[in-house]
Length: 604
Image (cartoon, rainbow, N blue to C red; front, side):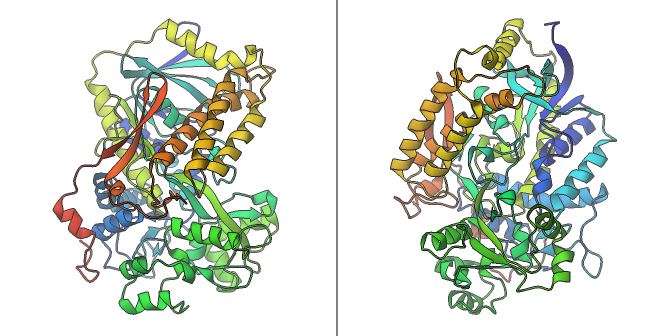
């Protein structure tokens, strides 16, 4: 084992976004030796792309808001398949995490009387999103990184983890290589936290950057953890489709929160045609407000463009399919007709500068062409709500790697508060776990040699498969068969195609050396993406209903029976096996919150 560069830490955190930084900070504050591994450069985490805000029921703009309403909104948005324990913990703890972030130096937008400002967002009953213009994720990462300078942990950047090392059913560390040199490295650890982000690169249209290839999810699964709710992949309603230079780039929900409207090619504000009657009655502040919504009255206080993301995404898709789409197959998102140029530049500075620079598009004068784009995975690794520990002792997961909080559909803004609440929990309990472990888990030379051989296989392959072409095939397969609308026939065809791609992985071949070799990196990404894609398609096949972000054209209604269960996946002798697991019964006092009268109480 002396041939490998080696580092030892009580807690190893894989992923340096919001969840990873918060976890590392907490574990270090508990006295643990912490190593933080990042696939790219520090500060490049996908958290910086979260623009709209951070959801926390602080009641600064509307004092009727409280954790109970936030809990209810999260459960309703998730179509009630959320882990109610996680939803409760999240709603209760989020305001404290915001205050903590401010104490660490975050500079949030303010109300006239100096409190933290909160904006409206889709699915949230009251203005709830704490924000910094449209750069909230960037401010979060800046704050966490600046605060982490004072913590005693070591950061390793541009490092790709290929394997979790196991001592029986306990993690013993991780194995991988520096992207700059290709040199392999051994990390020994008593506890591991997976916080590596999402899996959006499995789809053609995605807001996710190149790092989001489901690495943490795949590592956990191979270590013996379970997947849950993998069928629920959120397609953000507004990703750019034109010009090509910005295809897939997210247009923050904040554009709609600040007054932007969705129009079809006839100039019609079509979202009024897609408001479910029951949703309007449950969500509107008053019966009169619901009536205005359903009658298409533009004077309604909260616009229908701020319905939950699944509803808006399907509405745009329906308009395109009906021939009322924009010239490039999307819909028009227009804020220029609703707000002055100065207002747009002040409230949405990143959106304005980004599209001016990348697309020569002036959003203060022109509409944007948008289409649903793969944005977020509600499903992931099954964890304990209180500790963020997976089913593997000593292995923890937080952020988009984990699942449970968001159910069938994530509300905008809940992701950033999720990172803070459960990143902290993972760091706290991983440090406690490591402290109790008297001996270091064992790593064998055989396991390391096997991990190196598997990683280097594409350099020695006699095959002729091209990783770029195979990745394109995979993404097209997922877009066509497991995208926004699904059928049994399509999912079965998709699974068959994925099986063929999986069988061809051993024939991938690359040239050159391991140092900065993107083709080789793609080979390793493909191994994870094929696994993740199979999990999404298999879970979608066995949830025979439409719920939240999961739309089955052949089962258009939601099933009362399937509301009670979550789809789980586990490895059985190399095969992925699924089951429907019944959730623990929600306590009566929480059930009552789901129908809480709107006028009840001030902030509690």
